[in-house]
Image 1 (cartoon, rainbow, N blue to C red):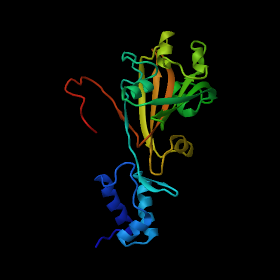
Image 2: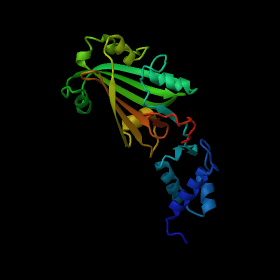
Image 3: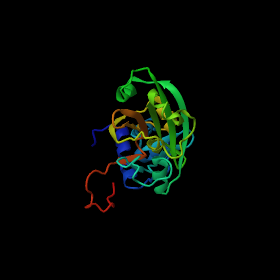
Image 4: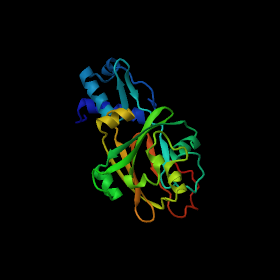
Amino acid sequence: MSKQPKYQQIADVLRREIDNGTYGPGSRLPSEAELSARFDASRNTVRSGLNALVSQGLITSSQGLGYEVSKHEVFELNASRFENLTFPQNGDAFSTDVTNAGRHPHQTFRVELTTTPEYVATRLKIETGSRSVLRFCHRFVDNVPWSTQATHYPDWLLAEAPRLAEPGDIAEGTTRYLKSLGIEQIGYRDELATRMPTPDEARLLEIGAGVPVMLWTRTGYSHDRPIRCTITTLRGDLNRMNYEIGDLSGWDGNESE
């Protein structure tokens, strides 16, 4: 006889059935009443088991609609060539990569002059609280919220690149725009971290309970100093990132996850 609590036993059985495809992505689980009869358990016990799966991001709950298996239509981002200007692209790298994957990109923008938070100021080598330009993108793939991107440019850069402070998109991408002015990003430093979302992040990305976010911070450098700091917040259930470094002649490009 299992020593696990009844609700955990229920969660384990349903998890196995989700894993083996009995309940596929987007499919609806049986009702609480049906599961109560199946497992000979109270509805409160069944609900506890279902909530355990919700907290793990495996299922979602909608009032009046029951429980549904989460969909995981993952978008894979090649971070090593993201913004690499030697690769052909029309517009910015996000739109190009999503379109090349046969999917539909969409972005909304907000541009403002703001005080620079310490996390960003340290990376830009400017004083905390000094002015910077924030270009904020809310990004969607197939109309599903996928990520947010907050890029800070130091105030000194505005005199040389005034379009950074203009509202709306820069069609050719900011990295190409800066290069056209002789301000070339010749290197970058990436930092990756994971955590649970803030309330604002959960709202913007429509994240359910139990789903973490990945924070990708990229600081870009010209030949003598940092020129921007970009913090991308990605839904942990819908994104995968890869880097390609060195000679990959032995790779056929067909490995699955």
